Each structure stands twice: as C-alpha cells, then as structure tokens.
Amino acid sequence: MSTKLIIQADVTEGKINKNIYGHFAEHLGRGIYEGIWVGEDSSIPNTKGIRNDVLEALQKLNIPVLRWPGGCFADEYHWKDGVGPREERKRMVNTHWGGVVENNHFGTHEFFTLCELLGAEPYICGNVGSGTVQEMSEWVEYMTFDGESPMTAWRQENGREEPWKLTYFGVGNENWGCGGNMRPEYYADLYRRYQTYVRNYGDNKLYKIAGGANVDDYKWTETLMQEAAPMMDGLSLHYYTIPGDFWLGKGSATDFSEDEWHLTLKRALHIEELIEKHGTIMDKYDPEKRVGLIIDEWGTWFDVEPGTNPGFLYQQNTIRDALVAGASLNIFNNHSERVQMANIAQTVNVLQAMILTEGQEMIKTPTYHVFDLYQVHQDAERLSSHLESDEIKHGELAYPTVSTSVSRGKDGKIHISFCNLDHTNEVTVNTELRGATLGTVSGKILASDKRDARNTFDSPNDVEVVSFTNFAEQDGGLQVTLPAMSVTVLTIEEGA
Ligand code: AHR
Image 1 (cartoon, rainbow, N blue to C red):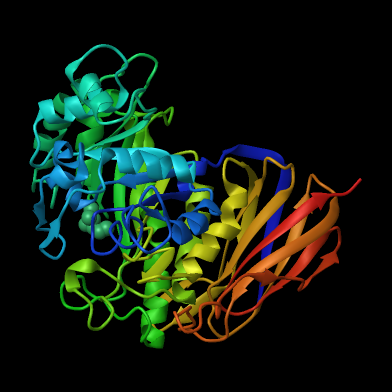
Image 2 (spheres, protein in one colour):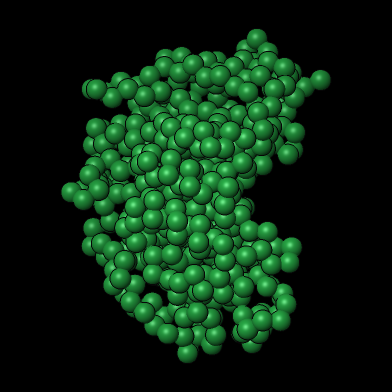
C-alpha cells in the first residue's frame, strides 16, 4: 500500500491551540479519589494530598488545561460543601456515579493546588441543572475577587489570601441530558441569565463556555448560536467513540473482534464530520470564528472491566485506544481554526484514561504515550499539508488508512504525526517536503503487533515509545514506512 503526504512548509495555517491537549477529571469512580487525591495522611507518597506518582507522570505531559468537577457531577455539585476544614465538610451521595458517598475532601482549593502543581489552567464547570444563579455567581466571586466581599473573606479564612487566576468557566454540562433535560431554547435563555452573573473581577477575564450539543444535535448548536453567540466565548461538543450500543453493550476494552476494531476506528473518525457540520452552523453566526468549538468530552467508552462497579466507568486501554487518540488529535489539529480546546475523558481510572492505579501502583496507558508524543503540536503553527491515503475496507466500512497532522513547533522544527490504522499491514507514506530543505530527521513510535496490546500492573511497559528510524530520504522528502497499528512522530530539522 502507498500513501502520499505533501507538506507546504512555508505556508502556515494558524496556531494549534495547546488547549486541544486538555484533560477532564470528574468526581467519578476512582478518578479523583484514589486516582489523584489520597489525602495528606495517606501511606501513598503525596504532595498536599495529591499522589506523587500520578502527579509526576501527568507533569511530563504538560497538560495545558484541566476540566473539573464534571461532567454530570457538575450539575449536582454545590461548591460551598467543598471548602473549609475537610473534616467538617458536608457529605453527599454521588447519585450519577455509583451512588457512593462523596466526602467533599477534594474541593475548590484542592483543585487549584492540583492545577498549580501540574502547571495547567483550571477549567471549572458550574452548576446550572440544580444550582442557583447566586451560587454560581458567588463561586466566581470566591475564586477571583480581590476586593472586600463576603466571598473574599471566606476564601481568606479558608487559607487562600490572593484570588486565583481563572480563565475557563463552563455554564453547565450536557443540559440536554444529565444537566437538566432541557430544550435548547430553554437552556439558551438560562445560559444568557446565568452567564450575566459570571463576572470579570479586576483583570481576571473569563472565557465563558456554553453547554453544547450531544454528537449530531445540530438543532442545539443552531439555537445556542442564534440566541446567545455574542455572550459566549466557546460552545462545547461531546462525542464518545463506542463500538457497540450505549445501553445494550458498548463492547469490551480488551476482548474485541476484528469487526469491533474497524467500527471503533470508523466511529472515532466520525468526529471530523461533526466538527465540520457544527462548525458550518457556527460560521453562519460567527464568520470570524471568535467562538471556539470546545470538545470538552471525547474518547472511547467501553463496558467496564469485569467485576468493577458499573457506575465507575473503569476500562483498560489498548493500542486501539492509542490510535483513536492519535487520529482524533490529528483531526483537532487540522481544524484548529475552530477547535480551541478539547478535553479527553478522563485523566485517571475513568474511560480513556492516561493512567490506571491499583492501590500504591500506577501504570501509563497507550493513550498516555500518544499525549506524550503529540506534545510537540502544543501552540505550534499548523503547516499546510495534503494527504492522499489508501482506504481500509471491511465489509461495508471504509476509512483512510493513514491520519496525519503537521506543524512547526516553537523550537522551529517540523513535526509530523502519523497513525497507521491498519492492524495487519505496514504502509509507506511518500512525504513530499515543499518550501523547506530536509536536514536532520528523527522519529519516535508507539506500536504493537497485537490488536489488544496494553500495559498491565504485571507488565507495565508492554506498549511504550521507542525510537523510529524506518524512513529514508527521497527526492528531498521522505519515504516513511509505518508498521501496522502505530502512532509515529517525525521531527525534521531544516537543512541549509
Ligand atoms: O465522562 C462521563 C460522562 O459522560 C460525563 O459525566 C457526562 O458529561 C457524559 O455523559
């Protein structure tokens, strides 16, 4: 098989917002508790209650932005229950996720500490579904107001003198579903109302994100844009890759057929059509593309691991997930004129996680390694490129074999990310480089010869990044041979 990639290195197409490499951590299952927060008295080594092993692994990813506290949890979260002395905090039942008791030990202060330790910007999602305007307004005041006020005084009493810097604020989550089962017209009015009281204090300028559509609910996007576009900076979109049926059985994360392999990748690539169609509606009301499309929940969603709590959404992660991540990120990069942020669901122990933990132990998933490899695209200039790929055909399904995106990093080097989605064949990509001279080239790859390859607590490094050298100069460009099921990043330093 052969595929052609043409790179026009002297034509840039705008910046790839680093926030495309954002994450999402919800109070769900073992995502926050155990996965991130163990508490200061834990025998697991921690910094201010946050486990050190997870912290160190996540720090290496340079997570630009972290969304919290949900998800569905956000619309039943009452932030005031999560501040003040921990032992006095109110306990609640997390009705969405397993009906477990939430002790509110991880609240606003702990979240900002986590973001500070990660060097990530906080993205807070407020409660529209079951919260009041006053509650949301006071949360923003508590976090960002510097002057004399009841909320400032309370924050200071709770140990934080200065306000925090907060940019990203979501006004509700999935308000068409778990966030209140609203009609778009009703939510659009509520959005207008709630966001009025989400104030900018001092020089803290908020980027307000309206709750957006589920998958292909274009009516939702049309209504929100028509009724509220001037009052928002971003509009969200949620899309999960599910090879089966959401209610009847999503499919196993590890034990899947060839049909499910193809269906997963085909469905993952569907996000491009969603971006284009929601983007076209947004263009009608916002031709300058001021309002960002914020894909603040995406990733694979499989059946939970056998024997685990169905409400905890704990799933393993294979090379198939790595390909979903790599191809999705390429799509986001290639639509960075509209996609200003994306937040994979979720960071630790939930859905398509970066990290899995079991007691003291921690492993990095194949998806973690993709985020590591792709860091080079964060805030890089997207370069003009054109891909002509062969297709994989399986029954009635057809989809491109190769996915790519190309950028020039802050280091001045050209970075190309390639995914070979074919699980049996290698593919040669004839890469033509125009507008630049080839100099030194280096590569890194994540690959496997087993469709269900994964890292486990017994064998944590089965899928890991190694150096890649299977390329050769060809007419000033490169002939690159990608093994089956692989994610590769090539770095080109220009020659004289
Ligand atoms: O990420 C899991 C859940 O999926 C989120 O809480 C919700 O917003 C979505 O339906």
